[in-house]
Length: 78
Image (tube, rainbow, N blue to C red; front, side, top):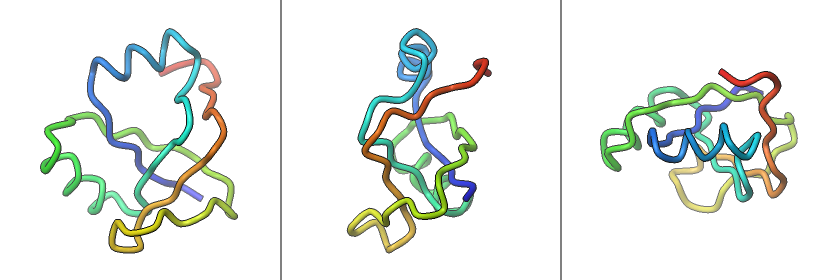
């Protein structure tokens, strides 16, 4: 499934150095939900990620978010 992870430039640099996003990895199911969260938090970067289809829903978050409890590895960077 395609999901959208909202982050900051500082965190993106950490992701690049570590090779991925450390758990818990939270992401929104729609770009619109990610955009709202981006505006509300001031985190300007939205990453498009591919989660497993069975990724569990994140409690709360208007039932529109998913979470991974394992590291999300980048394959080749951005």
